Image (cartoon, rainbow, N blue to C red; front, side, top):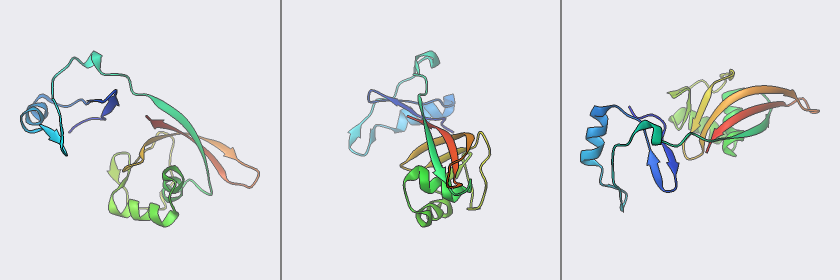
Length: 137
């Protein structure tokens, strides 16, 4: 119900419906022990989403291999994140660890970030795939 959140200079921006905004404004006064102020602003004040481009090298375009590399974790940890719903594919839980990514797929890894698959750049000398992603920063 809330779109992507953009954090810039200790301010968090988000887009939501008027009904959801009303609930947030009435009920959110702190996050943890940190007090927060909720206010409505014009959409043109929200900063543009920024990306950085990253290239990874993986044995295949299977989602478990990609999540392991993007998250800098083991393949077993990646499978665990997939099964527990801590890693999402296109904003949905995908329990199929062997799913092969397609251009434009969005991977969200809890506490690691959001990554958009841009392109397959071919193979390196050892036969591993080079994949290009945009990471939201």
